[in-house]
Length: 255
Length: 148
Image 1 (cartoon, rainbow over the protein chains, first blue to last red):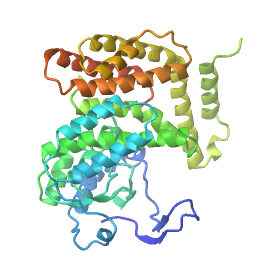
Image 2 (cartoon, chains in turn brown, yellow):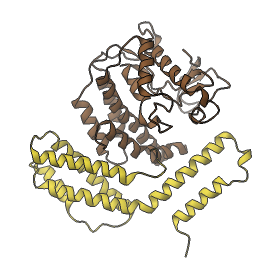
Image 3 (tube, each protein chain N blue to C red):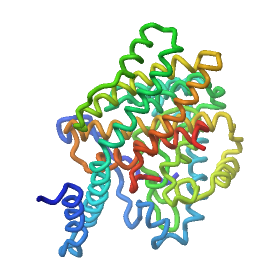
Image 4 (cartoon, rainbow over the protein chains, first blue to last red):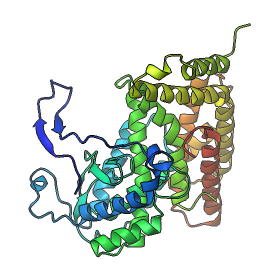
């Protein structure tokens, strides 16, 4: 699996405000999605789209029994994957909303009233698997941004990768690179498993709540002066209302 | 007369985009300036329309609450609906309109949760109106440059 190797973990929070890792540097690659849509790498878009879902299949089929991560990360039972994630991200919204969120609250109630089937198996879940979070040229050379990784239902990563927020090309393609059905076929062929449409839909609705939790957190951090990165203010203006709209769409409430 | 705020913000964006030092900027600085330009354009639109969209939304919620107050049996919720529906001589300060909007949206969440478990035609009709209002709220808040 193409990932930069981790060299060191520094747990002392006084050096860079918080614990950090030092990773292998991968040179000569692009990370921005724009270069894949209409830039110098556009010719590789189809191949990279397929490769993206092969790698996601490899992540899902990684045997977890002997992974060192088990020593520090809980492994949920198949019927608890969804509650653990939903409880966590609902708390994030509780703690960070700058104004009441009637659309997100309606979505959360729907998610609790319509639970997904138990996870078919417990797998590694990357947690932020999408275009923009890997390094590429004519192939993918490094999957990045593992800070939300956990054990859970493999439908979660698929659903997150399909989120409309990453439809960069506005052509309905997941991550701007591949049709949703084609992505599912690649993933199914790689894993040998079948996607459960009911579970996938639940996790797609959930992904809107999780994404909004992230944007609301950015907005609050910037608004209260704890962060100065303009990207955090930008994402609030660019994404919060859109995320509400995408959730309405996922719930079948938008025309 | 001084230039109005959108005109000034648009001028700042023009300055950022026509920076004579653009060719010597680092990739990070160029990205940061591009981000700032887009953010300022969105703020410009929001500045101009904020009071209008908040008044419109607050009025829509108040009208919805007036109709709902007659059918909600929960006394505490009915009182909150009546209070929300009462005509206020609002300040037109955006901060005051936003504060009222937040109070109304909090009551809207309670009303929605209350109605969606009731099984009668009036509750269903009000529930449908809430969904229409939620869709309308995303249209009011949509910014031209936001993610589509």
